[in-house]
Length: 526
Image 1 (cartoon, rainbow, N blue to C red):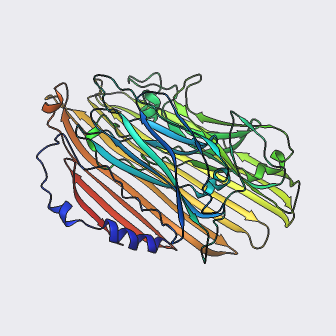
Image 2: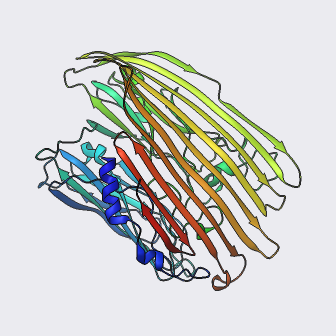
Image 3: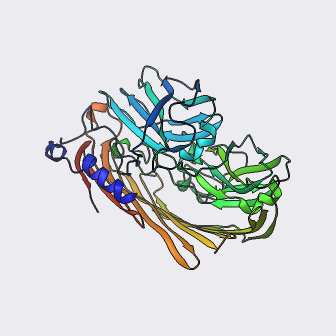
């Protein structure tokens, strides 16, 4: 599939002679290239398709769009793929904004918006939402919100249209394997079908805009002289508990929105990784299936460790995906192992002309359990190890403010039953290395590199059956003058994104480069 993606992307999105020949202005003007990312396009089956509009709205305030969805009849109800597409446009002046789309209460899409030019920009985002097919087979209520403020200063009205395209399963194209049930987590209450044999939770975790938790990785302990404080400092961990017992841990992705790091000129064309498509964190809760399958309501809670008690600032909507045993009315089982380390979270403050905060944090959790299904006993073991190191440096006036940070999230899921044991291993690494400086001439400059990396492998009976390696790296350097009218900022900036995905299914590679809002390179090819 990836090989096919690479060919498709190469024909449609290869190096553009026109783009390369376009003159680069000396500084940013009132317009720039429409936003785009280097992520691969979604491969679409060559079958009959049906398109449904699920939301069409102009967001001016914090009033949600509400509507209804009806599944298309012409493409059946067992699809090979379902693709969500957002098309947006905005012009004038506006901040970056966060948004979501929910269908039947299920959060299917979380996003942020680009900041516009005076003349206006257009952008689009696509997402594979096939695994929500259970929800999409029935008529549903729709809710969408991109909270916005429009007034005499911030004039940008965010105009969006969201569609779903359904690809029929016909000919040699089979229906996609999807969960049998998708359950939106209602508060902290969950009742699963009694014959559930696999249970996975997904959490769209984001630090909210407008407060220090948007930049949680830069927060410092209360005793340190810095503007953003948070009890023990910057360590954060997204946890899931089942009836009060820790069931899953994960490192949150350090999202940077399109006004981030005090410099919108970094992001006008190429956003940070995941900014337009916020990926949910997944937790395999199958070891708890024997507990959850008793037909009673259980408490499934999502929380953020490190967030000061009583403080808001995180949004953690969650869905629960369930696979059922068709041959059983009640799948029994038990939790057989629960082993966790103490959560490590230490900070060291070194005062000086350049203050320094060193942070080390981490946590380990292993849970195991079994279910007795119609096809025999299946044992699942989930092990996850988190580690975070960061060095934060800043001057007393914060005119120099820099961070070097790394987050490791190492997960192994072993499933033993119905044949040889299957071991899926994923090692995720997120990196951030940047600095903001404000010179004596009031010039603000941001230099920043972000990394989103993941290595995955699946082994069965001691033989590797699939693997992949992702490396998505963004680099930017932009400067502008503070405290002057917009036409006197004399902003300049370069940015680049290199996205490479290798694996047992092929290779995809794309590089984007910009200067002063002009796309100077768009190259694909492994």
